[in-house]
Image (cartoon, rainbow, N blue to C red; front, side, top):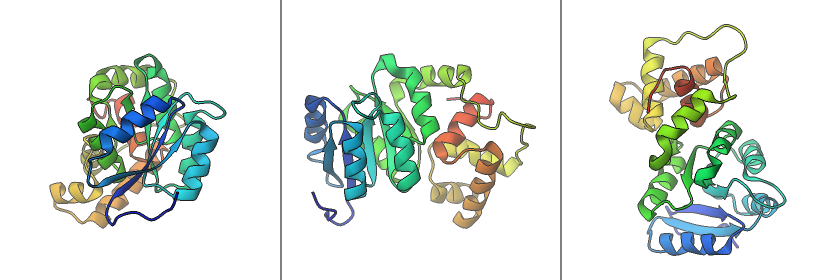
Length: 223
């Protein structure tokens, strides 16, 4: 494998211990002109080695894998390679593990039977540092977050958000990028970035997924 690719293509690594699933993803994405699968991993340790070698833009990883699970891998990837976006790949029966993946730093998730168009949308969203939650289970995710043990900002006094911060929280939860938020609110991208930093500090989270989880859990956003 090499780090080179055609200009402008989103470089993706797929991790799952089932070869047929990896082959299915490769087949579905073969005709995508701006997405390139540059590597495949069958377990968590192999995934970390590939990310270290290839520095992909996006990783799509199963949650439960041999040798090292997707949750541990996501933590390592976010610590060592924060520009690489992670999408969790899950079965319907693994919904509770999605919360752990979001807490670890994943920017989105898909169920394993997701269609081609949804996979492409998720890759684009996460590559643009936006969140993407599988459409078919978003209501269930909301309930899981509301009932989960993951409570960002639970220590100390509950933070207060300004009206502008609340607007930005809403737009982040809707999946808009910093540039899109700036255009919507008619402010500079730099101003949006400053507000997002303050929001994340108040929430005690580290990325867009953390903002969304916190917002849902604390009634600031409803899917």
